[in-house]
Length: 190
Ligand code: AMP
Image (cartoon, rainbow, N blue to C red; front, side, top):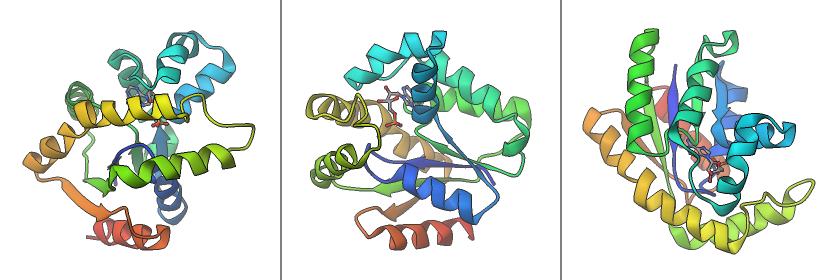
């Protein structure tokens, strides 16, 4: 089963993706984690992405589309993958449609984790305080505001994109973590 987790920064996509990964034979693919690893390793992609990410803006589509296109072919994705943080705009979603068709793969569900902006700031401040080795470069007030703006302008239109295709399912991201996980499992188990 192949799915997308969709939602604003701080909605809990990463936490829920890890829980699905642990409970089902599916692989979490977080473009944010992969880009942070590339920055830490000092790769050419990392060098290209570093400043853009720290500002809270999106890195160029060709970078993330290339990363995901390569990664979903790996053996550990054969039983299914969870896209966490990708696609982030309509052109990435269109590129995903094309790559899945070319590889003979299908998208089974797009799960939207619905959260109000108001609590996201608190959640991200909490995450910044709890992150081992110090906060992420983009977990600060200015970059967070930018990330929320980018979400509303570029990523939120994907809700309509997938609703039109009929693959969209929504869960209540304001509920506690266990309840969100339960709702997601309900969607995945059909
Ligand atoms: P995340 O960990 O998903 O919150 O992503 C952190 C940052 O990585 C984002 O603010 C972007 O700068 C970059 N990023 C992650 N995924 C994407 C994507 N699909 N497209 C463009 N930029 C991305």
